[in-house]
Amino acid sequence: MKVLEVQGLTKNFGGLVAVNNLDFQVGECEILSLIGPNGAGKSTVFNLITAYLKPTKGSIRFRDGEITRLKTHQIARLGVVRTFQETNVYREMTALQNVVVAHHLCCKVGDWGHFLNTWKARQDNRKIHEGSLKLMEYFGLLECKDEITSNLPHGQLRALEIAVALAAEPKLLLLDEPFTGMNPEETDRLVGMVRGIRDRGITIVLVEHDMRAVMTISDRIVVISFGKKIAEGKPEQIQRDNTVIEAYLGKTDEGEGS
Amino acid sequence: MLAIGVIGLLYLVIYPILFRQQNYLLNIVITSSILSVISLGVWLVFVIGRINIGQAAFVLLGAYVTAILTIRLNLSFWLCLPISGLVAGLIGFLIGIPILRLKGVYFDMLTLCLTEAAMLVMLNLGGLTQGARGIMNIPLPGALKMGTLIVIPAFRPGDYLSFYYLSAVILILTLMALWRLNNSRVGWNLRTLRQSDTLAPSCGIDIVRYRLIAYTICCFLGGIGGSLFVVYVQSIFPTSFKVIDSIYYMLYCFLGGLNYILGPILGAFLLTFTFEGLRVIQKYQEGIYACLMIIFMLWLPNGLLSLRFRRGAHKKGSDGTRSGTILDRIRQFVKQQTR
Image: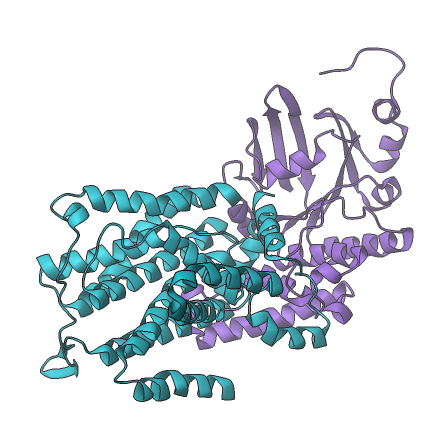
């Protein structure tokens, strides 16, 4: 079953075509990597899927439902949640508070209930608190749960961001360069965690530059260059693909596509 | 807990009994209390990461609603008070829909213009607001009856003590409601908007909705404050609340401390008392007042309340995120907003 289906997705910034007629699909419980040279439009694709940007053309379907025209928070409610390329956390809250706040979608009680602190709201809060601790335990963040996030080291911040995204209980998780700036051990640890997330039944799409991580983790890879898909396949196929090698290392003949 | 008890006792019992004959001293506290209610609204908009310099527009609106309803329709003040708040809140909600899309300086500038716009509207509404002549002789609050039972007796002329308690009760109610809001999940959702308005929607938080909630409450409190002011001074003119008032409401929040709900209240009381205290030196009053304000802000960029909470924060080893002068703080704010 297809979880995500992107069809003819196009985004123009003025005269620049950032994403050009892109098609791809993601299957249930798959880990799909989007790779490509810098400026290929990978992050733009994420921004389009989660409605941070409006597509010029094309459609995005999630579980057979059109999400192209929805707003970001509505898409999150359906179960499509992303992380960000630059560190993006609530800087003045503690790590635990970050995760607790991110459980917004797990609230059964509305704003009034929480304002009046009804019995049900308190029950909500208790459950969310427990859930948050469990999530943080999974990512090994328990020891820094009361630390203000702006004081956390990079590796923990990256893990925290994924925990924050998972707090929204996504069915499809979009990770934007989760392994950037990590040393190999940290990367391996996080690769293991990401696999664990998938094993819980969450489909993952990943934008990443760390090729070692990409090749170990991905079920399938889509390669983008200048907003166009130039290759798609299993990691072994991609590694041997001539167009991909050209896109990364430059080419010997022919002009570039615009 | 003890501190709250002492301050509550001082505010509600000792001060009014001690100075019950001294209208001037009662007046200062009444003014401070009403200003606190208004500034608490502005503070809530700070929580979502916006600087609101347009609160005076809604104070003016609330004041005119009460003035017109009591004079034209002979409505009781006790009915006009909530109506003024609701009207201001509704107008704020409607204006908020377009302007809350703006970020940073653009939002600030637009709210600044709102104050001026509100004045011009009141000036030009002709018969309804009586233009520049304003509305005078607004009646004092009558008795509040429930059936035959008189809950609150009618206010008598020159009776400052009644106004003292009226403003005190409204301030305490406002504070309790906002306190609850601030500590509930709603408050946390509001804070997410300031700290990262890109991450919040990704968590499923409807940022437009929460911005509107904060702004509507802010305008509601402005309307309530205006309504209180107008029955207190019994007259209203288009120039009663100007841009400078909007700026003061904002300054109370800055001076008291943006991170604390008690900040705007402390700021409002302290600045009003200081200003009145400097009345003895007439000529230099405003000059010295301005200098004091600058010194305070350089010395305590996070507001006065950071003194009280600084030690606690250090113990946890968690602070240190905010330092620098007030200008840095504003810059930081603007940067966060325009990002």
